[in-house]
Image (cartoon, rainbow, N blue to C red; front, side, top):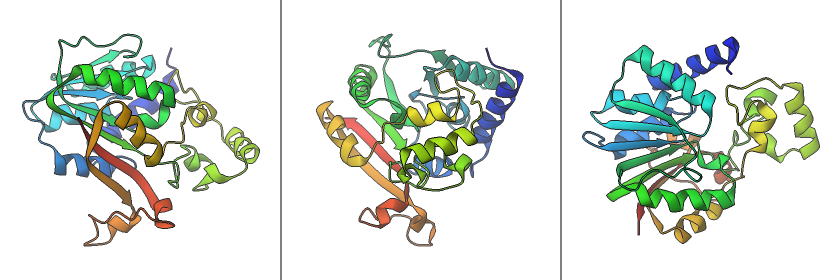
Length: 259
């Protein structure tokens, strides 16, 4: 059951993700998605939709049908309240674990989104997820994935609380003490606090993720490694993946299709 404080925080977060094209961790996602995709007339799945801000943004921005799925019941509660507030009728939400409850292969999606999701899924389970997604992707359909690689300054998901970028490289006991000192409840049931959010992370990097995708029959059609370098005029398309610049990458963006 969501407390009043959790509900307020969740709704504020979802509203910001929906309406703010400069939202701190999603502004680049929105730009990349707009550059790559036209969702008009598409069947869209937002896998791991969280509290629905981006899901509702897809439905508002394009004339498409969108289904948002999340494993966390609290997230779906917030999402449905947001949908009612905004009166966006081409979006629906569902609480579901697709590994335990796969979607029917009769329903096919033209576009699947996974924004800031894959880094929270344990690696053996991540393979099962991408195997299942093959069954519901339409011919010529694609999957858009974004995630912060483990070398990212904010990949720990707690750097905003402990006020130290790259804090994942601190001694483990030191970091855990700092997380505990700044602990506070989160909206989710699966990750109810900062320590749980940190413990959920699989330390994903491209060299780990790529072989998983290969084994599941996916190919990478497009990859963008976004860093602060891309903010410099004229350098939007530059991908600096060599040491030490790879430690500045804050988001990896992939567009996948079936082999």
